[in-house]
Length: 216
Image 1 (cartoon, rainbow, N blue to C red):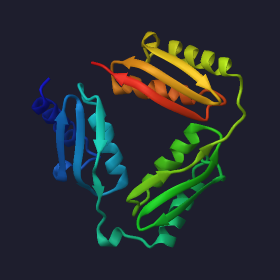
Image 2 (tube, rainbow, N blue to C red):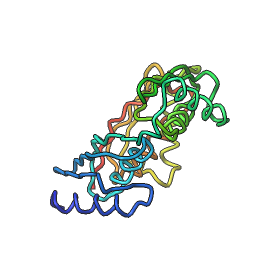
Image 3 (cartoon, one colour):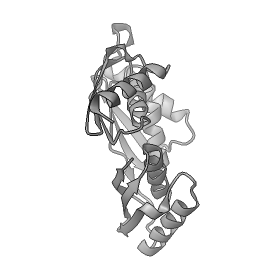
């Protein structure tokens, strides 16, 4: 696939997704690497644009340089924005009370601790849906008991094998001090995300290094 063809496919996917207003988004592609530039109306839309680009066959990486531009009536002062984010997280039972947030000029920083990666992901997802959020920095630390490294490696390898979305033969796992290093190749971003989710789901994992390459 040529760069021009890949750009066309990504533009078509952005236009096709009803959650995205693609009118102000510019797409460039070079050897499978796609860059998104321009403006969108919310942080959630910025996130959805990246996901849409990753769905396109031939995309190996996405550099999301989109800027969030909110109309004046959507702007909020720091205290109001922080309060809205905290309220939204409080209403979500998946998010522990150990997670806090600060806000400055539309940028929300998530702090505190969580026992599982899905809790950290949920906090970032919920905060990103709040009106007025321009950017999110995730500084939440994962803290839970650490089992033996061999147990973690074995449980992740088994998870890969039983997950229909993942070709376990193309991946390898190394573990040390709660950190998991996943390397190898997969055939799509869908498979990549499934493998990363499986690695994060293992008990005792505090960090995951993504060394997976998407090869079409």
